[in-house]
Length: 306
Image (cartoon, rainbow, N blue to C red; front, side, top):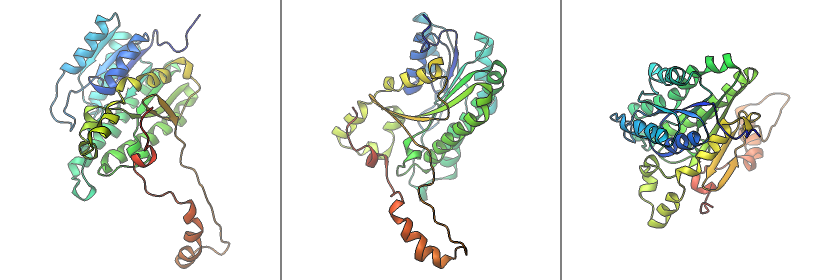
């Protein structure tokens, strides 16, 4: 009996797979039968330096466990580097079936202190990188009439966090990019979905708000391990999720939730049109009760991970 949750015969490229969530995803997808392109530039959490060691180590581990894997040390922030990830998949395994856009860095600053470099580097890796890798895979997906993208967004963008304007904007951009890909490519049998992960990683450990937490709060974060994220990724890459497209899921330890998409919640019409005065006098007070308050991630998920 064919198991539609397996990934046998599929080739999956995972960016940022040398450590953390990406590593857990690569290892699980390999155990599920996929051949893996393990991409990782090997930078610091802030995007500095380079080291091919982490990607090579994960690829070697997969091969030692009887799987198939090749390491790729390119930067997703460069179009040629991103394209090389897909080229390696074709060269070594003959096809590409899944792309997991996980690579990322953090350069957190309160907004008035954020530099142009802080902004640009985070955008280059997260948003531009996701586009470059997805774009490189698109012609192959189209020609074979199948393919699955799984992009990592974040509740920092979907909800909000202090000191992460660059990261939040990039991650909200990925949410929109995934939706656009889903709309454009569904006619070719291609699907695109997002995951917003809650997991302890070296990137999360650098967030100022986390660094200042007490031991109990830090232990709560550390309980959300990266291996809890991987099953959702593997499921979305599988044929069992062939009808799931343009969706965003959150994974918080043993809890999985589905996010909605922005839609109108209230409307008002005035036949003679609006003026600044009538907007302030009539519209804003009428809509005040439906306006979502400012919130941070901790306001929406104040409870311990289950």
